[in-house]
Length: 608
Ligand code: AGP
Image 1 (cartoon, rainbow, N blue to C red):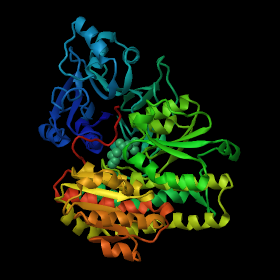
Image 2 (image 1 turned 90 degrees about the vertical axis):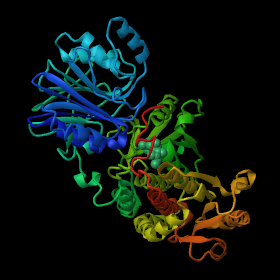
Image 3 (image 1 turned 120 degrees about the vertical axis):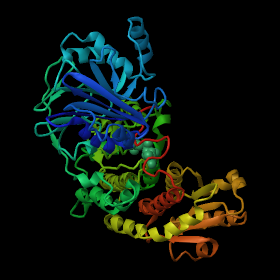
């Protein structure tokens, strides 16, 4: 997963490209590069490391004159994150430069063929074959050449190309990797994500798989695999530039944590009409719903944990059995899925390779797929039968926060929506839950208000060797996400356990002062978790409990306490996760970690 940008206009391209790349750095941040065309000559600058290094060696782009160019920020897949492997890649004749996001699966064969034909390779990347194919096929018509080249490729690509013989033009092609055209005044752009475009334009065209584009400063032509122009509607981005900026916060992660009351409101409010939940985007009849024998939720990472947290409400309210399965497992497990299965796919980015593969597998087996997704126009959104946007706004920090809470919120609302359609919920219960849904933003804010206390606790726990997160049922689902947050940004060993499982092995790891974070917000089984707290205390653990103020028994056992707003366990996960997000954030900050760009990670995982 990488980020690409392209610009053609009447002003200096390199600073615009660098600005765009900075916005895309969340997609990959191990190397970067620019190619700019000036008077028919291409110049390329590449660096290993962050975009800041590229800004430095190009003096913020000022040493690279030219009004047309492309740029790339990389998360290495094929070949180490070196300057040689960084994009753009140049053809041997110096005529073509390309940037690519995706994976070329048949690159070894192509590389052998091209080497035999005398082309030499400067990098270890899969991408480089594309630029040599361009040189090989080019006979003066770029559109035809691009079509010929992509016909030789297997895999995924968002491709940006400049050619010294085509002054003023940038070319692009898309297959299974996101690519968006930005429409400006006397200038046009492409980028992997709208965040790289909004400071210049809000008018965009979402490219589809199989689309090609030729852009000049005053024209945009989208064409298909037969070189015929295709009519595309443009869309307007309705969030403002500040949404993708830090806005005074030290990190995007903290900003996005704080945005959660507003994000959840943006998820819920448009779908509540006259006291009822209505998903206009789900055109499914009561009869169709009644024919569904099971629901399978599939996703990766935090999105999967969102599914784990939401499944309890879904199963309880609809009475339909709900299974959760990691997308990376489901895709190879020949799952028992048919036309009587509803598959719910969850993805913030809408680009995660395993999630996309799993949804394709499920559709091939006849299931209908409902996607819960944040990024508008993303692959998951396009492939689904029903697409429910979370409307969380841009999420830049690699560690998801508002992405997760809005996903769980959608699952809560779906539970009520389906249950009502199926006639399986009483009016009284529906109204009670409706009140809880409308109060979620307020309760989330109350949880955020614990920030000063959590900051203190982070000072106590940040030097720990390992942390354990325990809970049962809905609390266990939250523990899974809490532990992942801690691991990915603080690099501390953090594990989540179903509290009842501790004594089947893991309790052996508990020693004097091992932190155990006990989630006790599920009243029905609190007593049971309490017995696990007593067990770990007896072995020297320091227990931080998340519970309600009136839970006397836990108050007397735990070393530290965080008091949660009073909510019913059916919808508690989106509130309980807040202190754990904050704890991970402050622990990582105490330890001096690069919070928004944790090591070895990138925001979306577009490779298997
Ligand atoms: C969470 O903080 C991670 N960044 C990661 O687990 C993420 O949730 C996962 O890769 C799925 O991404 P998606 O929601 O974009 O599909």
